[in-house]
Length: 186
Image 1: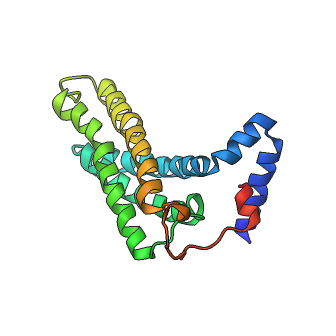
Image 2: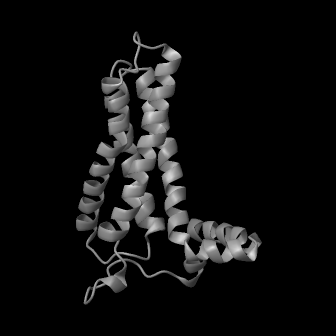
Image 3: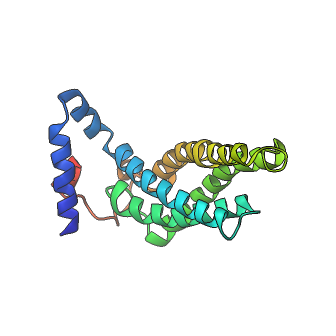
């Protein structure tokens, strides 16, 4: 029931787009869905990161970032599997999940590295800099730079290895659900 409601909303939004954008959105619908899932995971990441960093793990921002990315990764897997890349696949779920978390592990390293460099190479932390400078540097390095680097890597790796196009896998058996015609438009 909920899926059809979401599809109706997506179709209504698509119908209101001017023609060049409508065609572009349909052509890149997988990327757009990935971006929505990424935005959701970004909000989860920020909430957990700042919740931990400002409360429990104040002296350990990299640990807070790693925990936040792990929580956001679980959310991302479920949403990507069930929505973004729903029409792709053909792997057993256990194999797919293992590959997803391996790719996400690399993404975790990529997203945490700019924060580590900011804090421990450039020493952008109190008392060497003001608290405001430290917080801006943490946000820019962890939440902007790290997230963008990891996002580009994840989109490429998820499409290539985790949720490959069924047509690219010669002789494979499709285990993923087939899309209904309404999902094709979303």
